[in-house]
Image 1 (cartoon, one colour):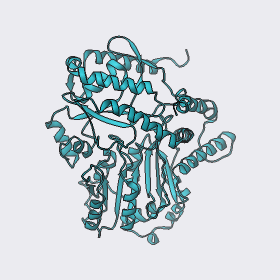
Image 2 (cartoon, one colour):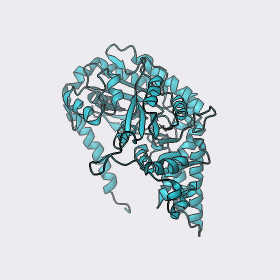
Image 3 (spheres, helix red, strand yellow):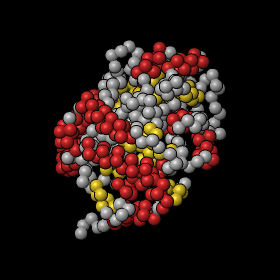
Image 4 (cartoon, helix red, strand yellow):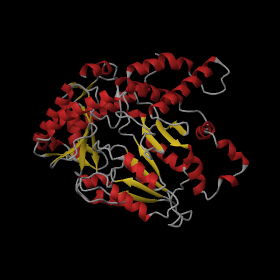
Length: 490
């Protein structure tokens, strides 16, 4: 298994990149932030530079060699994406933006959902659409729905911290008269790596006459995505994910796929109009090709879509079964080291079966200071978070569950700034030695953080800084500034 992934690791950009650390030495980057972003893959970059870029132009109007080549490359890339997610002939694929967040908002617009403003009257409560989200959502798949003129209901967790399907059925009964019922749920939490039962949610929603949309942003690089599984009523009406989180993905695009019945039935339903009463010029929006052309309405994300298709091909070449098997090996290796640290607490530790993501906190250590120390002393790249990304963080930390953006903002202002966690996320191309190094470094952090953090001050706006951190940040900023200031011809 290690040998299989070693051949892919050698193509990863930055595998031997060193960065300055607080003691003045340079150490190799140990990248453990895969849930935040993937890393570029040099064979993909070479193929784009050598075979795509020399022919780059716009698409359509295939009147010359380059336009014909690029139109075919773009259409082939979209076909690869569609096949990878098992899209049907009735599913529309949109590739745009830099990730999933903006595509979620675009999808809401396609559905005809209007923003919640003081300038337009709100729909009566019995006419409003209802959207069910889980307690595990990223804020982009929770707060964005709250900004539209819909009712948003959170499906409660059960006694184990997973999604309570019984509560979903209770909510569906409560809103049985609602004209449109939708569930928009994550396929995997980017805090814990735990997956809710979205196929079961799909079945419940469809049996109640509703729709389901699934956010695969966290899990797409690791798992099979199937919009149309064989089990009855478990199909997914829409999915979205960020291909930049794949190995080879940075610089690609977000992907949205949805059934065209949503575009026709839901959009016009919520405008209070029937299709029969539409002017004739709407008729050319019936076909998938015309809907996609309407939604792009300009230059498509050509290179971004091609890159997305290539990183999907790379994922397929690595093999999902092998990816998941290697993930579990690396996760278990890290978990065994961390679970015995007395002052370290893994979030949702009762659920060990997950994607390779561990979020934890160390007693009396600010999460941002902890992540800075892992960077400054060991060159480990991980993420620190406050509880702000959503209600899930509060429930994991047993701090209650503020329901709104305003509640969460006020909570953050009034409570201990240390409320948060450090997230380490892994990938199968990582070496066993890297996992052991990460674990040993966290053990040192847990044992010596009081000594090490004396030089660090908490700053709400700049996060946690010491003079050494400021110096390292200045070096990073100067290196990036130089990239833009150097001449391109000398």
